[in-house]
Every structure is written in C-alpha cells, then in structure tokens.
Image (cartoon, rainbow, N blue to C red; front, side):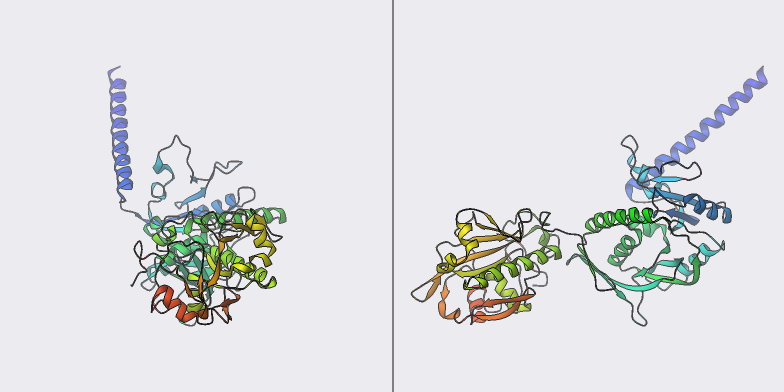
Length: 484
C-alpha cells in the first residue's frame, strides 16, 4: 500500500509544480502584454488565414495542405465569430471574444509566438513546401525600409505606389515608375512580415486585409517588396456565383467600416475611379457643431473631409445656378472669395460657403421667397431656409446633411455695401460698392461664380494685406496653421 501511495504523492507533487510553473508564466505573459513588452519570440512562421467567407470556403483543404507539408506549422484561422458549421481540425483565433473572457483573449500576442507571420488568403496551397522559407529569406535580405514581402497567390502581382494623407483623408494608388519601391501590390497575395511589426498596427486584421495592411504600413513609411519566383497555388473562393455575390456585398461593407476606422474617406484607384466612404445626402456630415470658427478636425491636424468638400461644392454650384436663373445678383464672400483667389476652390479646411446677394433681389427668387416664411425643400433635395442665427439665408445639402451655403443680403447706402445684421467676425465689415461693380466671373468649386470686380482690394480690406499669400486658420487665437 505504501508504494502506490508514494507514487500518487509524487504524481500530485509533479502536477502541482507544473501548474505553478504555467501559472507563473501566464501571469508574466499577461503583465508583459499590459506593459507593451513581449516575451522573446521563437524562430519560425505563424500562418494566419483571415480572408475567407464562412458561407463558402476551402479552409479544410488549406489546413491540410500546409500541415501536410510542414506538420509543426502554427496555423490559425482568424474570425470574428466561430465558423459554422464548426470544423474540429481548425484552430480558431476568435477576434471578438465573449464578455466573460479576459481582454487578452483576442490579442494577437496571445497566439503568435514566432518571429514571422504569414497572412494567407483562403484557397491557398503550400506547394512546394519551401515557399514560406523562400519568402523569409526574401524578407531577411530585403533593403532597409522593406517591412513586408509579398508573393503571388494564383495570378501575378503588380507593384503599386500608395500615398496616404491623413490630413486630406485620402489614399491614392498608381503604378510604380522605374526604380520606385512598392507601397502596395495589386492582386491576391501571401504577405510575410515580422510579428512585432504586425503587433504595432492598430488594426492588424481589419478587412479587406491587404488594403488595410498597406495603408497602415504606408503611414509608417514601410516598404513592400514582391518576392520574385514565388507563387502559391490557389483555388479562388467562393467558387459559386451566389457565393461571390455575397462576398462582394460583405467586402463593400467591410471596406467602408475599415476605411472609416483608418480615417480614410476617399480612395483613388489605379483606373482613376473614386470610392467614397464619408457622408452623403442621406447621412449627417462628418463633424459636429463648430465652436469658435474652428471645426474639430483642425485640432486633429486634419482638413475638411473630401466628402464634405464634395457636398459643399455641389451645394454651391446648385445655389449659384438657381440665383443666376432668377437674375439675383450675387458674389463670393468672405473665406469663399479668399479660396477662389488662392486656388479657384473652397479653402481646404473651410466648412461652409459664403455668398453675398443684393437684398432687393430676394423677391426675384421663388426659393428665397419661400425661405422667408419657413423651410423649403427644392426638387433636388436642397433645403432653403432663413438662418436662426441672424438675418440671412442658408441652403443645406439635404434635410439630413447640414453642410451649407450662407447667403448674406447686402444693400447700398451712400455708396457703401452694408447689412442689417453682423456676425462679429473681423472680416465682417462694410465696403465700397465700387469694389463690387461690375461683377466678374471666375472659376470656383468645379464651376464658375461671380466675384467683386476689385476682389483683391476687397480681400485686403477684410483680411489684411497678405491674406491671399499667407494662409491662416479662421481663428488664429484658438489654433494657428502650422509653420506660421
């Protein structure tokens, strides 16, 4: 009896020691994650499959292909939810854990313990088995600044230049020129990078994966290099027409969500086409109420979102068309006149358009007459109303989107253009009517607009001697343009 008892005690002791060691390691790992440091990563490659569709995929074949070629390979299926129906042969990295789990349960650092990570699309096969090793050598031997290497998965890749401007909320792609390094690739690719670089990205597995990775890499100045002579066999998924349609719908939604998270409102593609991810007539504008003439995006080091500028241009052209059709004399006012003088457009950080009109011409326009008695929505969905802030008119982009054009009624008195109400802005002053007449036409906001005949002198009166040559934010007391 004593011998079996000794064996039991020894086994219990060993088990307790093992549990203690694991618990100590686990606490240390959690502490490292919280402090932003990580245990040393081991040699090797972790494969992550993120781009797949739960309703039609080839994950089982992919898993078998990679593990058959490299049985010790660490392969994870990264998914927002558990794939259904479940496949017990797949190891799932659930990106959105249930609320009863700890926060680190969905962190990549909890699952990736190798120095390199490969991002592999669905339908890919590892044949021959050394493809990942060849990519690893390509990354090791790459020029300084290359942080990602790409290999074709199926069809050949094209090297692209990518310019991301957070200030302007845009991402623009074009083909590279001779000798120019890649910032992105066109085509389905296997991507390989160092795990620590992937950990650095705030959206490491956002979808569409390639564009999200490349945009974040571009903001960090990371280069991309295509590994020549390495092509992974790939069977595209989904394979059915209905599956591809569902995948296209899902990708549009994912792209919109990811671009908004990344702060991108406009993507310019290779073909010159534009994809918009900001506000529209059916949605509110991208910023809230403006305080102190300084919109919130200026404090973030950004200018007016391009979707908002597009809406302002469209509203300005529409209002100008209506005024001209009804014989209403108008001209660009304030910052809009300043923008026209600088670059024939709205100032890139402005949030409205200002027009002056002759007060006596208000009765010539049905929309302005209707706005005097309340709000009027015209046939194109623009909202004409009398502004609650003062004795002027406002035309909004739509009932939902309140980007607008302000119309300021002036009248001449003793040769001076004046108004019945003023905003208190420094540039809000009376001016000689001789500065105004005769009106002339200039290019503005993708169309044309009327401006005062002597608008340079008028701008100097309103904004100062060097207002055109030396741009400044609307309220320098709160925030000045950098470099000034």
